[in-house]
Length: 397
Image 1: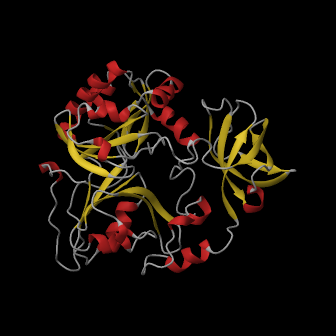
Image 2: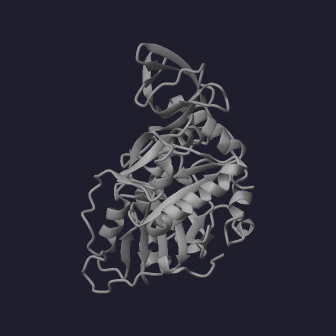
Image 3: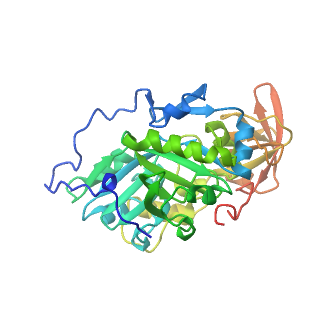
């Protein structure tokens, strides 16, 4: 799967002095500031509404979120998803270190393969979820968001033969998502994308620029995330936009992304769950491996997997087009049973959808609930997730 390596992604030598933190000094690693991504020269000329994500200014929408959503569903959307942070772990202990931090068995990964993973604290709560990319047994990328993954990896790496490096400010991420994304991207990509399976990656060039491409995304459509060094980012994104625009691709923002991820029931760290929740409570109990060797919180996670949680995430189909907001309370026969974590009006269904943390007895499919949304009372039904394309057929074509 792995093409010839390009210089910007060459392996970093590890710091081997035992007891010395495996981390090169950089600028202050506080999550503050307001920065523009490498793609801003193109985006800034068009977008007028923005949000802040992991210190970066990101477009909320360009024209209309629903229009951008349908572009992704019918052809493809082009996103700036910078702020999804690449944390690179290299060195002889890279694999055993990361395998000790996640409940999935990473020893089964092949070079070029990607895994959806979570890391957990010792109490079983989730540090963050991420896409993990394996280049070799001595080089991995943890691609997450604004959680504490960098600190947790660093904390557990002291004395190990590894080097840890955040690429938040040196590698930015574009995403082309939609049913036509493969054929459109292939026209400017040196790798044969037909040979890159779902949740695999390849090193190649896009528009003449060295990149890493993973067949992943936040839409549950066929799509590709493109990791580009900042110094080449402006050119690549501008050229990619010039190439894709005549074929019906739309620049898309965070609001359109949220519409599609809600229909697909893709969870958002810090909104649908955080360090207070274990994988079982959020429907990721399948990640908890009962036979692999030691990993953080193993006994607690296995015990949680074998028991019934008091509260867990559930999907709600709402009657009508009025969507609740995060934090709105959910009731059954006047009894409070939980709260909304995410909600939106679905373009696919024409009615509102929501994800909620509910008392487990209230999560039976078909259960009718009432939602207190300010001075409004909304009615919903507990429904299976994902709401749309539950077998993920669209992303696996």
